[in-house]
Every structure is written in structure tokens, then in C-alpha cells.
Length: 259
Image (tube, rainbow, N blue to C red):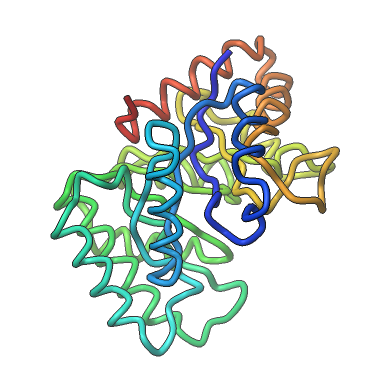
């Protein structure tokens, strides 16, 4: 079996001491390619360094995370624009972007402007978009309505909505559901959502170093735990884990144009 981790932050401090080992463990577990979502200008250089050091394994994105939308959001957004204008084919996606109303609503209006702009760039540069949505589906739908009918595609990372909300999202673009470690948690609402959603609409992710699946919940997450997520999804969908691996990997390869 082979897997793709469609959302891993290999470039953060948590992996500084043992990144080669963590990647080797992931490969031993069958996880052979990794999509690196962007956060802000401050993390761009280390992200690109990891992508260069592990070329062919790690694929970089560019974007501005909603929790990084602060007083300097205009200059941060200009940085993203400059990267796209200079070398759009360097990146496999734009993001992660989106709306986060959980941590703070201080810049919620600016978050909407930033999200809308990155959606427009997604369409302009024919790149998928990685969307972060936390306590904000009403706002997400409002922004999507503003840009409709742009030809959008992407993934709703760490999906936390209902199956019905996902069906509504699909009306605005060719969006997939990012399924991570949360699906393994006891009483996780995501489990029911996965049961009610077609496997062809899913990709697997870790969001490492965060959101480790059971039995590692609360510890540092790694891409090597993707098979644990796949096993849970297989149980929910009542199919072999090999089918989960094949379908979600094909979905990831198609969405991010991985070669």
C-alpha cells in the first residue's frame, strides 16, 4: 500500500532534531509523498528548504493562514502574490487559507478579504486551494458565494463540518474532504461524516505535528501514523484498508498533480 500525507508541517521546530528519521519512518509505513501547506512569510524559507532537501517527496504550497492575518496582512498577502507571480509552478497548491473564528475574531473581516483573494488566485493560476475552516462555515459559504462561479478545486483540511455542509461546499467547486487523526477519537463527529461521504471525495492527512490519532493523541503527530487513520476509515466504510489507500492516494495525486 502507498499513501500521501496531504497536510504535514515538516518544517516547524518540532521536527528540527529528527526530520530525516520522521520521514524515514513515514516511508516505512508506506507514506511516500507529503504536501507542505504554508502558514506565513516567516515559515516560507524553512518550508522551501525542506522541499529542496527532500525533492520528489515533499511538495511546497504558498499562502497565508487565517490565524496569521494580523495588522500586517496586506504585506503578507503581497508576499504570496509575489511568489505566485514569480514561480507559480513551484507550488502544488495555494494555502492554507480560509477562516478561523475559534482563536480570535479580531481580524475576521480581513480574513475574509485574504481568503477571497487566495481563492481568486487559485482560479487564476489553476492551483488547488487548501482551506482551513474552524467555527466559520457560515462565513466560508458567504465568501464562496462572492467568487462563484470561479473554477475552484481543493481540499477542506481537518474537515469539521457535517456531510450536508460538505455537499453544499461541492456546489462551489471540486472540493475534497481532508480526513485526519480526529476521525480516530472517541465520539468524534467526523466519524459519522465519513460514513455518510463517498470515499472518492476524501484524502488523508495528519496536520503533523498536531492532531495525532489514537493511541498517540496528545503526543507529536507524524506522517507515519497515516495507516492508523486509513484503518479507521476502512472500518467506517466497511471496506479493505487497501481500497482506502488506493482511492485516497489517487485522489491526492490528481488534486495536487503529484508525479
